Length: 228
Ligand code: CA
Image (cartoon, rainbow, N blue to C red; front, side, top):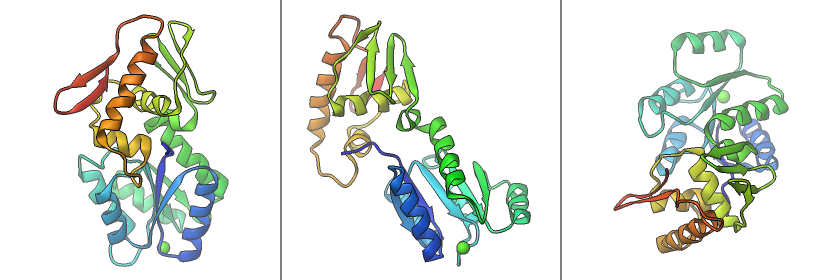
């Protein structure tokens, strides 16, 4: 069970791929590995990761091409891409090509710096996953201390309800299907019935209203759930 962010590492050199993956896993990220562009595109097809670390120099389909393809698609456009490049002149070229990459790192890079860049992207797209404080109306969620308050009352939430709420609070108004919530909150490798989602949504609603206040969760018929 996890809402750990998933990082896709696309790097053809095995040793570099492993060092990077090892460090990302040590930081608590789930890591997907791809050794070329085709494999990366296939993995993204199965479910978009939260961040992609993409080497520029790859056999066949280059990192630039992968980046361009992903940034053209509406379902993957929002996934942050950090491009790795061997030389700073390449970075200039990559920038000039306007591939839409969100950040660029020149090799050899320090692992610490790369981790900071990954977290910086997540702070923007998955703030709760890197310990940020989220607010929605009178609800405050502190991902660092795992505390949730509503109108200054501290709420008691189970771990699953906490992950559900942080998912909703990262993107208020967004409608999540049950399948998307399963992927995000339970993890896509675990088999859980979609009705389980409804059960935990029910518990979350109860927890959110334990000191009164209107139910902030909206059931969208045939689509799923949204906050606000
Ligand atoms: Ca390479």
